[in-house]
Length: 319
Image 1 (cartoon, rainbow, N blue to C red):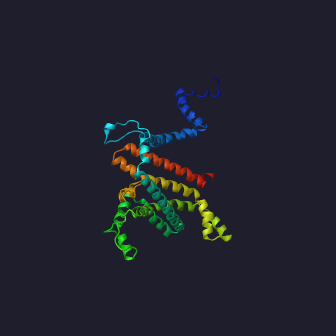
Image 2: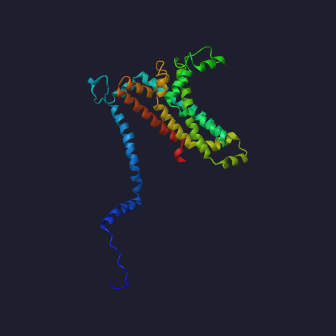
Image 3: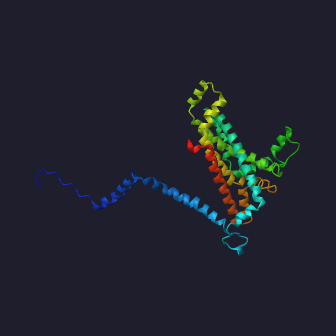
């Protein structure tokens, strides 16, 4: 080698080139169109294992015999027998009627209470922040705790609610609210509305914070009153949030029978029997899992139908 000539660059190790190959391949893959789909694979795997597989197993179970008290019947395929039995089951039709009342009235009450409380709390003050936490306290309580608390408050002998209503003259005597078929479902709806309305309050209040205040200032300059501003500005801006909250709450109420299970256990008679509670009792009291699966599939179909119709009528996907 001549004096002063530049030295040749050292040869790269084949091991180093091999180590850099996965990083180079990953960098090229991240710039391709397949990268977003690869990122979705873990979520799809979780959905398949936790949601889709149990749902399909439940649908298959609704076409089979599965009675733990009658092992002699086996677990064979019975076709549509469970669904035919549902059609001629008077308890199912009563439970369906009660489910529609339970979900509809409870959601409307919770939405109205949540909207009113959210509008009242939409103030940037320390007092309103403290009051917001206090209003959200019912939502923090587990269903079991809330149900037992209200069962004691509405007790016909020891309940404070009866004592207050009697003193103001709204009732003539102590009343067993959950033992009367005419008042049991209404009392349970009131308890559920008290427990669930903070869910709407929280979501609607978050949506109100995102509404530009300039819109209200412009409406005031144009001479719009508070009701007109609410109808033409607040409601359209909250449409997506309200639709999502209603759908989530309907699904939760239709699939969660623990409140009614503790307060009334479906009684008196079948006055507060709903489909989810009927399915639960059929599975874990009568141990007829095939019939309970058919009840669950009917609930799934009803919820899917409601969601499709409600989303289409609300036109939230067109915005």
